Length: 131
Image 1 (tube, rainbow, N blue to C red):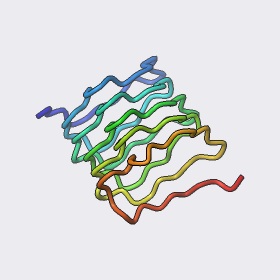
Image 2 (spheres, rainbow, N blue to C red):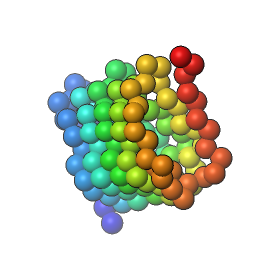
Image 3 (spheres, rainbow, N blue to C red):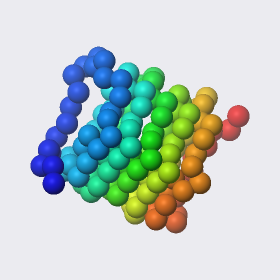
């Protein structure tokens, strides 16, 4: 497995995409996704079983979270940035500790795969803004 224990991106990073399997099976516990990332590709953080916290910079430009992106991680809660339009199959599958998904105000979410939380906790709470 990948022994990477910590990941930080430089301030004002121009990174636009996190590629498929980029951090597969890494050991880090948290990550801050840079502002300019628009896409998290397939299985980018899959099997990161120590990953408990994923945060996005304020005004994140993220639009797409592909299938299996965070599959089999230890996330407890997650706030989906407002620009996210698409969340793919099992993006949060096998996240057995995942309990709270918060959708930001003015969310542009248009497609949420019916199996996005496949094999995750059955007690997931969605916090959706009142429009």
